[in-house]
Image (cartoon, rainbow, N blue to C red):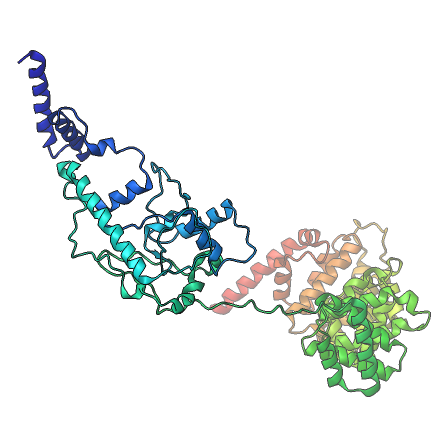
Length: 639
């Protein structure tokens, strides 16, 4: 034995020891085992390795019978494939039977369960169609028995289903031939593959189940289940391949999925045009104003089914149609609008848009209806009373004299239809600035009061009238009895506890005292007034004391308003030297204003009234003394 052979034996002895080492991966151990067996076989490769290249479909069928014991029928001939597609009752009469069409249909057949053998990498397709061969791997074709092979050149019309006996005999012959081939080939298998694919013949029956033996009359019942003729969305679900030794379940007891008919298209009517809606609205309004049938009119509007964007134009049409009719018809038209709102068919915003739309048409409408703004004011007044819109919503688009004097006309009609007190309370609650509702040239108190008096609306601002008239009354007769009587006759008792009223009352007294003392703007504000002026000032305050106490007694918040009126008066006169302090002392000594009101005025931080900083600077020391004296009195009372 030479040295090379000895070393080779050592190598293979090491490989045998490693081949039995369980710690190595199985792949490495199998490679070592293959190498050892190759040397023992005189370096002649096994037939398994020789056949490891690309295989034909026939070789794959033989391997399947040898390894798995699965029977695969012989492939269809070219003629049989043509017969199947040409004579199949499922094919349309005029379908183009070219290679691409048949190949595409065959691909769809190939997606059936159990049709995967015969394709994939490393497989060489035979002379048959590469896609048509897929479904031949199983004797079932969607519940049908595959027909036996025919001659390639026999392409004449043939029946689709052959005799059951011929089919069964064909399957038995194919099975016997394949089993004999598998016995011969198993001799060349390596030891570790020798047991692979050996199955007991008793365990697997190659005879078709009874459900396979179908009568020819029963075949058409299965035709709707062929997936190639059905749309992908309506294909039945795939079934799993039954295990070996069990007959396949064809699912013949299950009903085919029902054919869903497409729902009939409902013809939707297009929405009515704007002109058609306007004509319908005019017809409904005219009929309503003639018959006064409110229910029928509301139903007519409801049946119109007008889109939301058309609602303002519909309301505008209702208003315009009633403008040239009697006031009774205008009232009925307003009732219709309010009922539509109650029924939820319109909103207050829709009415405001309609109101403004009609205003834009006023120049054209005034030719036929000269009093169009007065009539529109009636609609607005009834809308305010019915709470369809608020005073604030109505006032906003009419600011700065827009469509003047429409806003004042609306208030006039509201007062006429309701009452003055109700409108006054509603207007004060709205916080509308009346001066901004006038043209810019008229936006001052005097002009506003003049315009309101001309429209009969001065009752909305009783304090404004009081400010102008009270000073005249005090000047003509300064006696407390006359002043008090005039206030009772001209000012509503509801305003006697109003801060605005107290402010005007105090301002009127201070202006009268300044007139009597001869204090005017431009005088030397730094010089101290003579003693006789101070004494006269005090006497006048004592004369007005009963009237002041009548309205200020036991009302701390009203006393604070009186102090703010004094602050504004002093600020308007440039804070004459010592004036604010003198009045504070006199009010305190005469018990017109109490300690709590002075301290509340000091702590209040409102910026509504000008001059608070200068006022505090002048009276801060006195307020400190007042606060200290109050604390000492409280301690004495406690002792």
